[in-house]
Image 1 (cartoon, one colour):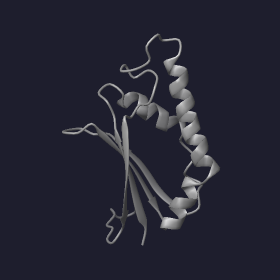
Image 2: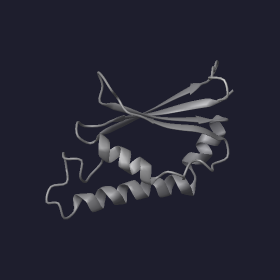
Image 3: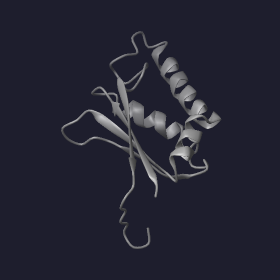
Image 4: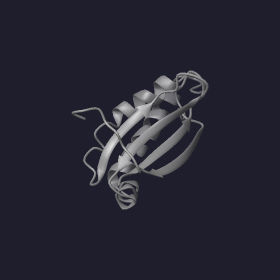
Length: 122
């Protein structure tokens, strides 16, 4: 059965759009990975400042291979470069969704899928 990983990102108020843009720029980096099954970026709508980055993998080994892949490093390097560029030339770059990290904290939660129900045709 599949393995699910949640990267739980604490995102300060006003930085959600920046985080979403950075993830959009990284589109395509994970989809071709062996064992990759699904990705979702989940925006909080009530009661929390935490975004969830949901990925589903065929196995723990496939997830670990992704973490050690060139594509993973490339995606995170691109996000850091985008943050750097946005922070320079604006005078401040923090607190207004401009430069610096879009998230102030991160936790990784892992789960095994023991039951899955999908809509017909999915």
